[in-house]
Image: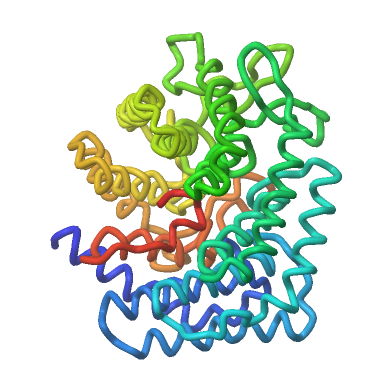
Length: 405
């Protein structure tokens, strides 16, 4: 049986499971809620050219809206309202649905703006759970609106976030960075380098803002100096397989050998620096990013890479999807070979008899270390979306929610 047939069979299994399990989700966000599952259903419909799956997608995204209307108030991008609103924007972009330009926005924008301001006060810029997630939704609205008048509010919101980032930034001889809590239990403070929670997401976000000429002059130096800071903190211990640590603290670098994953490690750092190099038109930065990403393709030992499960966040499909994206972008055969390796590893992980389509998520804590999950970030909806992006003859935009495409 070819890999393509195996993957198509997985998609069918995933679709059938989501039909019966989506009602169990009570969150609305793109990464951990029902709106992310709707993305799978719409893209699967386009892939198969069968309307029945789009009908399921409409039911799912309608449920997200109903949950909000019925009192769901959690605001974040990962779990809450900002993520659901972002999904509505992508669904409109991809012409999966037709909605009035102000659908939901007028009622919710002020609420999300206040949530962003609250997080700014505590310098919580976390992409998944903090201020940058709201900014990412506001940026999508800014991009999709067509008149200067309608864009004005969103530019003001983004300007407010940019000003806050500048004010709270730290600067030293290495460049610019931001401080955050690294370990709550031990109250460790420092610079988180990750894409999920750290300054790689800041680089990625600023790069997307800088693509718009009206923002470029305001953020380009901030962006360049943050990239410079990251590149100055490569692991000096050459026995380590990772180029970067998870984070930086004044006393040194704990756990210099970061995992191979979307959430933490060289892949998230590399794709963010690559985007920055492109928007800054700095070939030295772009070349360095490609070198970092190609070096990471040599890491193929499951134990060394700390890959325990298959999901997008910290599993095999996340690694596969990033390499597949890089191959499509660069046509470099190194990324194709890495993509082929990890898709086979990902298929091999579908062995759980009690799992969904054979997959379970590794929790790594408590008595119940394995659990079933349907979400985009850690579950089968995300696995399915990565498979569609691999098999489909068309480009997909869903992985913008992970700061990839």
